[in-house]
Image (cartoon, helix red, strand yellow):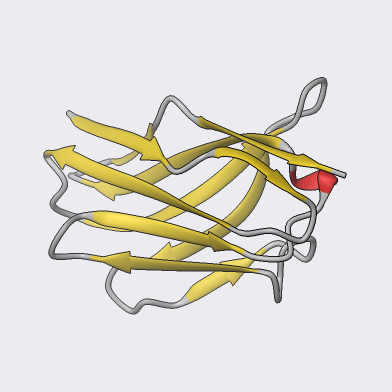
Length: 119
């Protein structure tokens, strides 16, 4: 069992910055990757960014590329999302996801943290 706890959300003006954190605890060995997803009101959850746990390779959606940076601290089992130049369309609940392989692929999700960007 893996627990994921997000933090760092809040209200910010357009052009501002926020840093989200996702702390993993429990059976966190065999992590393949971790990522951020978001869901705006009335819309489906969408991919934001992902980081491969071993190689550190990163992947971004086109909508955040150049503005958001994903990083991780494997010693702390923590992932971060630095969000710069925020736009009102970035307003959403941001979810952390961990993908692990303990004989089978398992995805764990956090409860989410609200990010609101005012114009």
